Image (cartoon, rainbow, N blue to C red):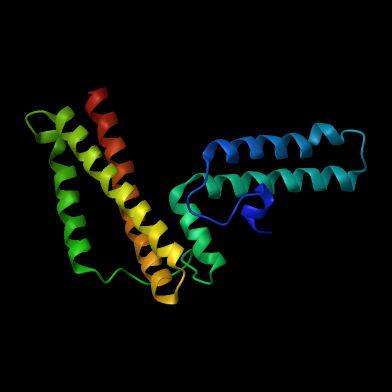
Length: 175
C-alpha cells in the first residue's frame, strides 16, 4: 500500500500538512473500531488493522525525514537498514564542530542565547536540506536520487543534533 495513495495525495516531498491532517482524520473516522462494534469479528479486526495502517502512514508522511526516506524507498533506494556511511568529509567536520559547540553551550557566558543561536543555525541547515532534497528528488535521475539519499543521511544528523539541543535546553531551564 502506497501511503500517498492511501491519503489521496501526490507522491511528493512537498505536501500540504493541513490536507494531510484532514484526510487522516477523515480516514480514521471511517475505520474507527467503534463503527464496527456490531460487525463480525473479522470486520472488527480489519478495522483495527486499517486504523493502524493509517496511523503508520500518517506518522511517516508528517515528518520531513521519514517522508523523504519513504519517497526514496518508493524509488528503489532503501535507507532504513543500511550500513553505508557518509563520505562527505566537509559535512563530517561540520558535524564535529557543531557537536563541540553544543557541548560548550552550558559553559558559555549566556547559555540561553548560545542555545538559541545554535538552534537557529541547526534549523537553517534542516531547512536547506529539506529544500535540497526536494530539488534532488524532483529531478528523479539515478544520480539525483543518490544525492537525495545522502541528503537524508545528513538531515538525520541535523535532526539528532536538534534533539540533543532540546536535552540541553531542559538542563538549562531546569537548573
